[in-house]
Amino acid sequence: MASEDSTFDIIITGAGLSGINAAYLLQSELPNHSFTILESRDHIGGTWAFWKYPGIRSDSAMGLFGFPWYPWTKGINMADAHLIKEYMEDAAASQGINKKIRFNHRVTSESWSSEEQRWTLHVDVTSGDGTVLEKKIFKTPWLINATGYYSYEKPRSTVIPGIKRFQGEVVHPQFWNDEVQYDNKRIIIIGSGATAITLLPALAKTAKHVTMLQRSPSYVYSLPARDELQQFMGKFMPIQWAGKINWCFRMFAELLFVQLLLNFPNWGRKHVLDEVRRQLPKGFDVDKHFNPRYKPFDQRVCLCPQGDFFKALCGPNASVVTDHIETVTENGILLKSGETLEADMIITATGLYMVLLNKIDVFVDGVRINDTFGQRYIWNGVMLEGVPNTGVITGYVAATWTPGATARTRQFIKVIKHAEKRGATIATPYIDEAERARLPKKPCMSNSSTYIAEVRDRLPLVANVGPWRNGKNWLEDVFRLWFGWVTTGMRFTPWNRAKGD
Image 1 (cartoon, rainbow, N blue to C red):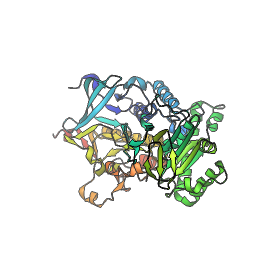
Image 2: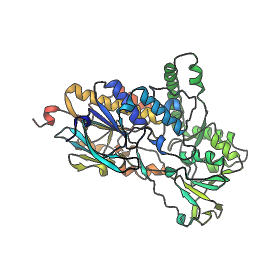
Image 3: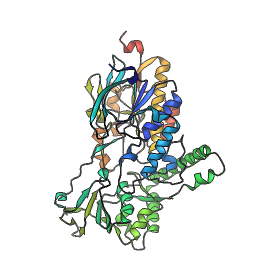
């Protein structure tokens, strides 16, 4: 039986960006509800406390990526990970959220009981090295999962022919630590996503040579290194006002930029490539190395601060190669073209292993449902069809994460408020069989990146009609939050009916 101190009105799993943000929204909109945050590690930070590779930073402007309720004041547009972690710690402490977090509490299973009308969470309390010290049970009627969508323990599996033959060091960015030494080494980064774009200029500062080896190009775009607008406004008005105005400006700018590139892809391609050419030496083969087959925002556009990536390529010890791997050799990589790249270190920046609710087994009335996530529709980007009283909080993949996480958390809070107003204890996204047969089955993430496309059978479905959507931008999500009917596609069960009386 769960003790009194382990029973809450709402439980949040994960003390990363989405979990801290959800806690603030709960305190603000449901102030009379008790809640706690269960965090598997011993600190706040999520992604920004986990990744350790050189140069790790945000790939969005902090004025938008940060919390709307706690303005980012450091003036840096794309902040390093340790600064983001410090910012999150300060934000949590400013609202007393840090006192609500139970560290080293690793959730192993979540089980919904219609008879009890609540979730039971089985939790391992661990030491710093992961040793299980104690097992606990927590109970709650409402559950917010804010653990993200990728595995911390398992990277995306990629077959690289001959990699075991390599005599140098092979490193995956996900497991980078202080023991990795790269000074004065010849390094090949395999990959062309945000991680590779971040790594190359950071490594090039002290490495002998860094080559980014890609099968196909990505779009890369430069942002200013500093947030001059907020710094200027902060001289004349309270920082909260300056932060809110800056947030609105950046949201408008991002929406405009993304929509222009989506709706006018030929212009968008030309604009991005013209900006690349402007930052690289004359004669650099931009079309070969930075002109993807896909349209802008079919995959995420990689961002770099003040063109640091392009500045590195202008130097003598950084390059990009677009080719396929024939095989890894003892001393480097042989390419399909016949060229050989020599290396002392290979970094496999080949993507994330995407999975909802990492390593948490989820049961509904005794039936494990993890293997059916890919067969269930998502309701307004936050709840899964047939899964009661729980929100799965994610942000945007092709745009800034936090506005999406905020809109979806508010949508879930809207469900809680409506349930309590009606005297209901259970809220379950529901589709009757006839309607379900008519609904199209589309992936909830239409992004064509390989690491997303290959796991679509594990991710929820959307129909892009009614509430069965996963919004792609803040305006779309907020419109449904403000004007959508919370009862559409949702079955609210009053207390007496839930008990079978």
